[in-house]
Length: 311
Image (cartoon, rainbow, N blue to C red; front, side, top):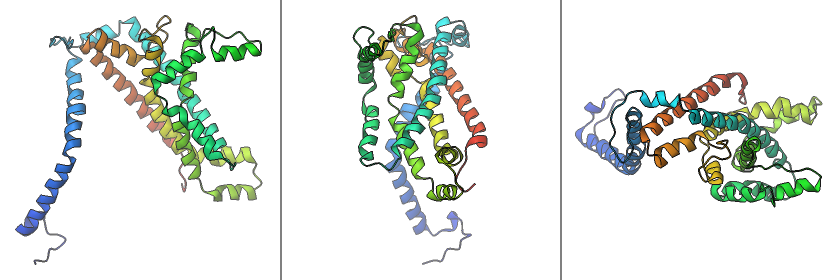
């Protein structure tokens, strides 16, 4: 058997070893081929096609013609387009910070050394297993102004409950409330982040006489920022893609007065209800640019407030 030096190139390897290398390479590509084919067919091809369709009047039923930037020009003149952007930004601005605040607070409570804590953690995680359609139906009953449980409980303390889903002022806050009910998945991630913080930091703080609040502000929150950063990025992306809950609650109408017409809902309507696939493709790429820009801003600012252990 010939001895191969570290500096030997692949071309200098004996023929028998070349064949072994090629065979293993082919086997790897063969096993990976189902995933690669799926990636190309269901992601890469539609992605590239949508770029072209955004410059056409393609309508699914007809091939369409190239119209340049006409779709983008019409979008900026579309009042409902701007309304959907406003609704989506409103939801993201309120839901993402609230989900982080409540998620961290809930995770810290569930991280306490209490008997039966595993049961409590399971209870708070269960809402994430409920399908969004079932979740929407459940909350439509709870928030019903006439016989809903929420307004019924408010009446017990002398408060007249609002028309949650039938009021322009309360429709989006109602949706935020529903979404906060399902933050159990983020709470599990925060719990994992809390478990990763070394006890040595808290022991040193105890020696210095720090109280619970001081340890939370100076140890827990700073060392939990990598997890907060991850949930911030994922939460922002998810908020801009809000679809199932408002679509189910309003049967795709976005009522009342389009206050629940979110960006992805309007995109879906244009593509699959009005068959304006070129118009919808243009909306999809605008959404892509917005999400990428927002994610880039979060990443650029993360160096100022994300702290890692050992740094």
